[in-house]
Image (cartoon, each protein chain N blue to C red):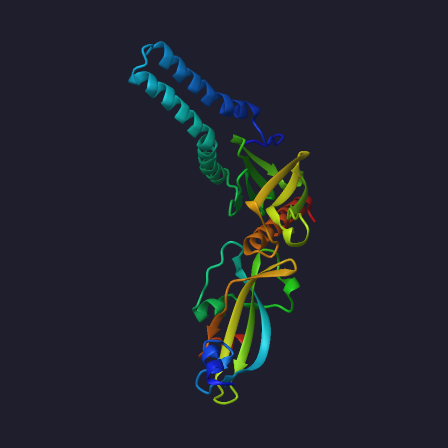
Length: 116
Length: 197
């Protein structure tokens, strides 16, 4: 990938700025956010909130109507070993989803909680 | 608080809502024409002000009454020991569900002086309506609501209303559908609890 590509990708969560290479996806997990219901979503960037409010679920159908869910993806850099966690809070609505914007943790703040 | 048959519309209030501003306007015109026969500033004031006040009452009067009725509803529910943490404010109706006591509280825009607190068992049917219509690129909705039947009357509570048609995957519509689905579940759970399921 050229310099322009690197420049465009520098703020993407699956990109290591130090090694300038794409991160490898390690795992994905779906969580429920029982403390957040429809109409009451507020973006949280503090890891403590997610440490206290995320509960593992197997599938989207397990989340009751009106409750928020959170998709999580963990990436790892094959070069420097850095791990990045991307949270994607969304509201499941029947067969669709209302996404609220991703929250990225680049310093392993949630590793101990999410990836036991 | 009332527990008798639910009435969505108080026809006396509705009639007064239509006629009282008209009567006020007529009174202003009458005073303007009789007291100020020569057409002084007083005639202009009475004729104009009565017209403006009447229009303001038609436009905002109902909302002001409904606003204070909602405030009074909360106090009454608190006084009666009804849990009102699950409450939904809509343009035409306020619904509150006390899941523990299996009670449903209702307040209607066109019947703002009557607060109904009824057993959840009297709610016979609950469903959500996404209001979808149109075909192709015009397929969408301008109203999402949840509905329930109580004492044979159908109550519609809007969770999303617009004067335009929105696509079903629009965020506003999705939120409205989610609220409607949530409230269908809340009301169903209260009904089942009352029925001892």
